[in-house]
Image 1 (cartoon, rainbow, N blue to C red):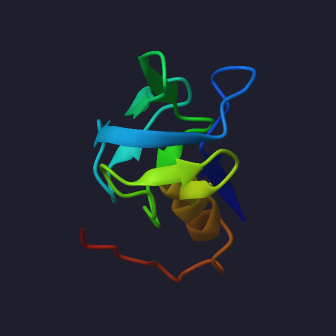
Image 2: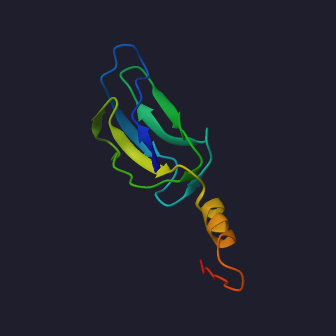
Length: 102
């Protein structure tokens, strides 16, 4: 299951925002609370933070495009992929090994 990154309402009457720039690239590891992108509202440019630790994926929000508040702009796996791989490796039957090249 993935954690969605939505364009948040940064002001009471805000209906849209514009992504000024992504601070992380798709496929890059991010930590919860780490800045992901800069969003322009009618009053300021504000950084939004990663809602969870994982890999930034499915980046749909494009720089310079007006986006409605609440729209999904990216997602990331709910859990860190390395932790999941190690867990799966621990579940292998005795005598069977798994090699992962990265």
